[in-house]
Image (cartoon, rainbow, N blue to C red):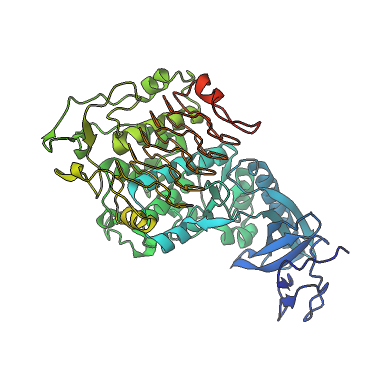
Length: 541
């Protein structure tokens, strides 16, 4: 028997009938019931993470591995003990474990570490993911804006596409099951207690007595669509739940608080938010009660997200330095295929990676029209700056307030109030670790020595900004715009620079060790030669 470590103050008894499961650390057996406190002589439960109709989830440590890494134990308990029911439960459990093992190869899904049966109880041991769930983010920091929700969709849709191609329906998509992983700020889809593959579903439909188990895995009612509540989930059921999740992010309200039309049953969520008609129409289609009218797969949603609205919006107005408003000749929004060709993309437009790549460029175009006055950085400054699409717009006379100095608290407060335009701002030397500032416009800003470690800066505009010696280690810079920026001697270790625009960016002395530049555009070999790299740096192809 390995020696128990003293890293945790107590051990938790896994016997579901134990009347006093909390135990002091260092014991081998429960003081109350005598059960072993080590599962399989390897896993020591520490505390309960959650309970449900199908079992209990525990935080645990692996006492056999060096450092005693943290893991999650899921105890799956059949509701009855009849032999034939236990046999069917065992079959479902094995299929569940097989499914989890199959899908756990994705970097944004928790890995299955072990599964076994002990004393008529079934156990799954999975990787523990540290971080805040989207539900926790909203409760702590408030409702999110449109660009944040678009980024969530762009991160979660590839996960759903992967699951559905594996013939797996998650069935419990909700804010509490999407966690932003601390180490890299990526969203991870957790809690696969409701997962069922197509084979398992067929078993359930052919064996009524199995409903004893599957009824526990319907998902969360306020997020699940009608067909799922009727025990007939399809791939599009996950899409519906993701839409409800987005509405929660936009409103900060539980779905139970969103009223529905008494006659049609349609959600009245748009009464609580102000977003573009384009995104609203996409969410409405994801929310269709009728499966045949709903999106059928993640690729369709990505294609519609990247499609440009045809009508002229307020974002097409530009403000001259003199303060007068003018509307320049309208640029034709690049189509997904033309964007891909202009960047030398692969001609395989059917690939999901290509779709997301094109969408990232389209999102940058819609979001801020770039402080440099152009998309690709190939044209000179026009002398005009775009009006912001949200609050904090540049107004006539504001151009005299250049190089406004912010404190970290002032910046955070401005962002919470909806401001995203920080053109020409002076943020040098600020400590902004782990701040979520996605979608901000930092064009021409002074960011020298700023500490953005582990910050979320996806889709930000850093055109012509000064990022010398900035700390961007571990930062999420997906689809960020760095054209003509100075990033000399910046720390970019482990940073995510996927789909970033790096034309004419000064990378001299920048540390790109472990950074991910997959899909980055405009970067030349000469720029990369001036930077520090490691074996783990993912360079653009």
